[in-house]
Length: 277
Image (tube, rainbow, N blue to C red; front, side, top):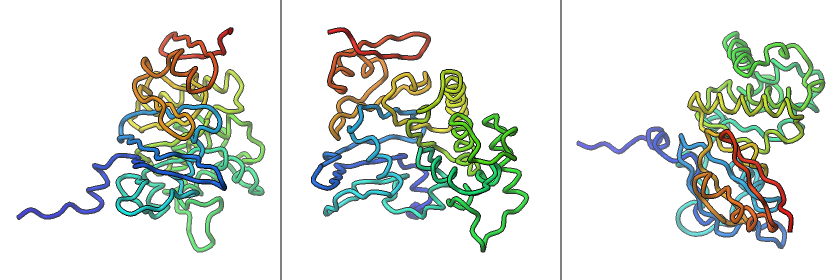
């Protein structure tokens, strides 16, 4: 007798993200236009494009801050195969690293770094009054800080941290759940050259450990060698989708960014600069 698969088993085999003709309208502007894409678990992917192409809207769709236009039939947005998630359950499988988290945590008074990492267990910025922090949570928080080489920061105030230090704390906060995937939104924005290089090395180590990375950016320099698939967005739709060698070209980037761009490739990394007319 064949028994139907359980919902949990079904989500384990499902893609990480699925957008099926997702359309988002903000005010009078159609930000995403019937956007369709599938990102399998295990495939490191970069979502690249200029300002206003729909990258931030994609993040907000996944994070349930925005919803696509409703339509009959199947759901336009699925995460791990499901259209609706309990936030706590979702955080156990998907870690988010966004600039919004930086702002919210740094505005919390007297918040220690270790405590900020512990709040990741509760999907909040403080420990809820009715919840207990057990020794196991403390141990996992410190282990996560150790993984991102941030143990020396554990007793410092979050508000005192530099941008680079804060990025490591956000990664640690996401790692306490041992998630299967991380969604990273412009992770090196505001970092100096040395801090940026350290963060890219951290991203590479996470990818090599088997954590699926989905990087949302407009800087091709952030696309580490472990990320082979690039989704290039333009005007709320997919302009190109494929390996780095086929998407990170002068022609593709010039069309997507609306101006002549010259691409260089060295040591597994790509770089781009405006080309002389």
